[in-house]
Length: 260
Image (cartoon, rainbow, N blue to C red; front, side, top):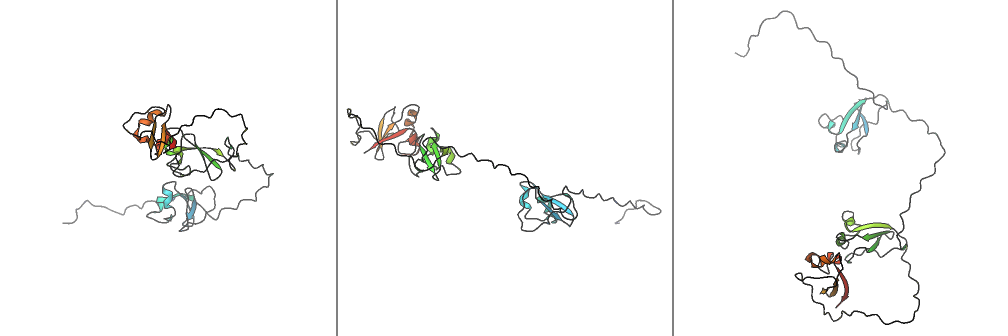
């Protein structure tokens, strides 16, 4: 048997009352915004109309990416990007003619301070070994300074123009114009005893050895150049193989003083 007897009855079931439809609230601007247009790029907070009298608002990030893909009338995907906010009728009333007022003084933009030497230093050069405190310029108007150790190791690796890594090694210090003015002619003085000039041409300095112990002033040769271990607080890095002379990081510990 397919049916079960549940009981008996008389008359008919009383019909229920028709449901009362609650109208959508009229949105704040009254008139209807422009209708949704396929292919238009919509931003979060944009308003459109659909179904002739309903107003929709593009949802905030990240759902706003769906606003240009799906119409509010899309029964399956429309609510992924659009939110119903009210009803509307007619069009948005045009605003009145603007009242002409006395123009205010345009705000002045503070110029970038000029760096201390006023002219522009040399442009950043790829492959150049930079040390803490070195200055370079970019775009012939911006001045950058190589940061102190340990960030100085990045100065030779990344240009100040590198949007991702440039700030690792460089700090913008100001603006510049032109070139650094040449210094005046030196005043001729009575000759003094000639200063002692260290001659490194004999290449008597030992080759750099990662297992050796170096102190301030130690001399080594590497890659055809003579390097001197920097004074405290950089001396400790002279004994770190990661700061071998001749490398980008090595400029933080060693100073190139000659060639051989």
